[in-house]
Image (cartoon, rainbow, N blue to C red):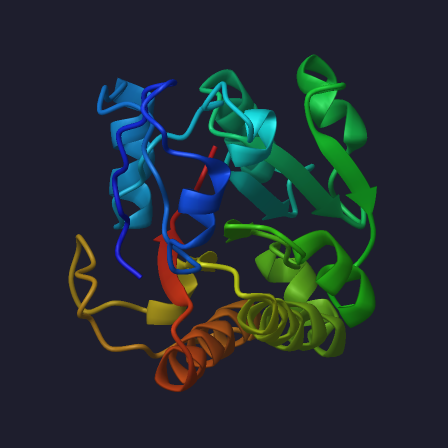
Length: 238
């Protein structure tokens, strides 16, 4: 669904029952004010995100956006989680198996996020942490090119099959939006720089192939159900 802005003022008669009638997957706004970090987040996700803070009525804190970040204890995931908390985007749950991520990455937001140690290949666990979630930022992956080449089986299992698990659970649980973190490696050796988003997908290594497979799962999901999915192709993040 497209994001649906709702202006709410306590005492206007809009009860939580009103919000329950809104189609699943809608994202609501308590205020139209835009901060620069919010605009940047919208640009990176290629979607419109409306801010939801506590409505201060019967629903209380229950009406905040619920966000799941897979791989949220990693380098990029940690930055994203801290930004979401700092900007008051909503309730954040982090799912990370700590294969490469570190819990101390989130030291400054401990007590403000829910942390679950586990693997995205564990479908039952992914389903549990996705229940009631509005948005999933899917960053969990084997993300080192050289390590991926040394263990292609694990890389394919996590980056391709793990992504499929996250997407299928999101669809089953009625998650409104999934943002998949792909990579510039899906382009292989580009013919020209800077690389256009419309450049041919021609990965040259195991990591790029696994991310391209993840994007295929995203497209397949979009053809079957209404969950909105977006892919971002990151390059040399530091």
